[in-house]
Length: 434
Ligand SMILES: [Zn+2]
Image (cartoon, rainbow, N blue to C red; front, side, top):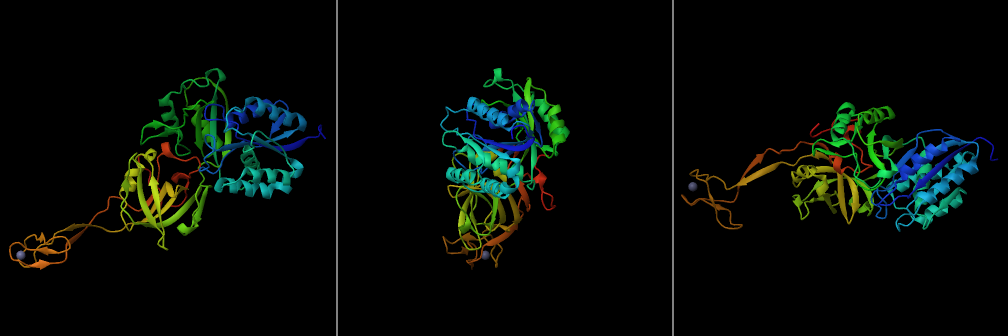
């Protein structure tokens, strides 16, 4: 058995903590270490799961490798040993999991792993469900501590075995170990140049509207920068323009980032559950208000009359200015995650604008003088000739927004949120600042 050439999918999750490591780094390291005795069959996969899950580590990411090997036991031993030695096991929120799927099982497990993957992106899955699935499918695995990482490990295997999902790519460059935790040295102007040279085939390297770099993280993990784009050659090209401290290694992942895979279309608010993400159509039924902390919120009503708060939080910066221009009666399609009974807006399609009016005291129909209010609810009265009127003067005023699709800026974008530039239809894009 162990000398036969065989294929294997390896899924890994939850080896990192907020302070250090990164599951993708472990994946890149394993890919390189295994390369002396295995062959890589396809691009490594990086999947983002349900973004509302509170106990996620940093980005709720898990990874998978697809390899061909002659010594299965050696591969499994190496991977398990590496996770045990490198994962942040001391951190209470780090609960690694690894799953190995052998070639002879691919067909038998593909459908179940694929639907598990889709559910893990949209839904809330328990550790017990993951444990049940791994034993039902009789897969080789290892769960560390509470085993939460099995959820992502199984999902990543499902993603690897399923060729049919929308995807993008990310080029992740990693730092040399001796500088982990120190300030990153990446030349900012080279990142703006990389963006100029490759946008829109790459995106979210920088945020031009807010004039900041987006692709360089600030935490203590090994990632130096990440370039997102539509294919391998585009992210490679962008990376070639980046001037930085030495890169220890890099890895290009196929990923569900930028695909809206997390969104569920619903036609009514009554279908909405906490900790899921939705596309919901409705009518604005309150003027947006900006509350303490700079968050802008309006109330959306569906056709049944149910209501829900929709928020553009402070980090969405200039996007809030757009939201503040909405008025009651505007018809919109809102995209975003629901937590605490509030939709966190990732993008919005304004389909119909309600007319806006300026209300003034009317002119006197007899003498033409501007009338005065006769008191609250009393209508209007002409001071000059005594004429009364109930009807104010309504003048329609021009709205300063147009129907269309609008999204949060790159600096506030969720990993999974599909960018407007990736939509193919027409009535879309408004790209402020580009
Ligand atoms: Zn008058």
